[in-house]
Amino acid sequence: MRKEQILIIGAGGQIGAVLTDALRSIYGPDRVIASDIRPLPDANGPSEVLNALDGEALNALVSKHKINQIYHLAAILSATGEKDPLWAWNINMTSLFNVLEVARSKGLHKVYYPSSIAVFGREANHYDTPQHEVLIPETVYGISKVAGENWANYYFRRYGTDVRSIRYPGIIGYQSMPGGGTTDYAVDIYHYAVRKEAFECFLRADTTLPMLYMPDAIRATIELMEASAEKIMVRTGYNLAGMSFTPAEIAASIQKVYPDFKISYKPDFRQKIADSWPASIDDSLARRHWGWKPEFDLDMMTKDMLKNLVLQYEGSINK
Ligand code: AKB
Image 1 (cartoon, rainbow, N blue to C red):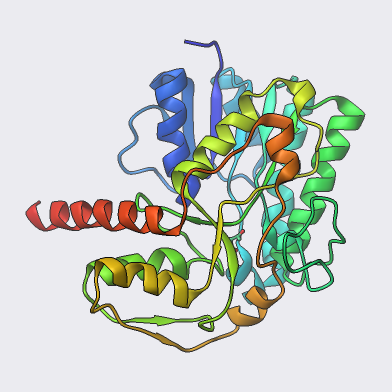
Image 2 (cartoon, rainbow, N blue to C red; image 1 turned 135 degrees about the horizontal axis):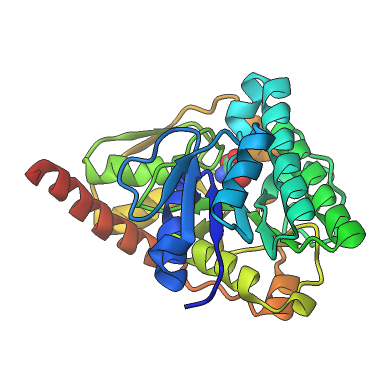
C-alpha cells in the first residue's frame, strides 16, 4: 500500500462514486476520504460532508486527514449551468480556487481537475478536434473549464502545484447516474431499454458526440495520476477519446440485444449545446505522453451496460 491520503470532492457524483471505489481498492479504504455536499449513503470507507465553496472547511478537512492528493470532481455541468450562468460560474470557479489554494499552501503532491469537451465551440475543427485548438465555448460550463484549465496550468508553472486534467467526453456507466449534462441521454437510454420502455431523446438522431465507457474513464484518470510527472507535458487538459456515436447508432446497438426497443426524438435546448461540441477528438498526445488506449467500443459497452443494469434492476426487485 502506498502512503497517499486522498480526498475526493464530489464523491456522490457520477464519476466520483465509481472513482472512490477504484481508488480504495488501490490505496486501501481508509486512505481515500469521500466527500460531498450531502451525506454519502453507503460509504465503504471514511466520508465527510463538505461544501467545496467553503475554503476554511476544506483546509480543516485536509489538515484533519493529512491529505496529500485531491480529486476535485464537483461541478455544475453544461445543461444545468445554462439555467443560471452566474451561479454555475461561481460554484465551478470558487471551488477550484479553494482546491488550488489549499494544494499550493499545504504543498499537496497532486490534484486532479476534470475538464471536458465543452471547452470547444463551433470555431474548433468538428472532427478529430486537435489538442491545441481554438477554445471559444458556448456554455458557462465550457467557459469555466477553459478558465479552470488555464488556472491549473498557471499554478503548475508559477508554484509547481502538480495539477493534472482530462477533457472528458460524455461518460456512460451503470453504477451511477449523471446529472445536468448534455450527454446524459446516453446513460438514460440504457435504463429505458432494460425497463422495456420507449425512450424519447432530447437530441436529434444524427448528433454525433464523443463518449467514453466508465471503466475506460476511471482507468484513464488513474493512469494519468500515476504517470511520472515528466510525462505530463500538457498542463491544461488532455484530449481523450473512446468512441463517437449518434442517438440513432446507440439505439441500433441496443436493438441488437433488444430488437423491440423504440426511440423517438424531441430536441430541446441541449441540441444547441451538442451542436457546438466536436463529433470526434484527436487524443494522440494522451496516447503518446502517458500511454492512453481505450478498450470499449459501442457494442462492447452496450452488452456490458445491459448485463449489469439487468442485474441491478433484478436486485432492486428482489430486495
Ligand atoms: C456534459 O454533458 O455536460 C458533460 C460533459 C461532456 O462534460 N457530460
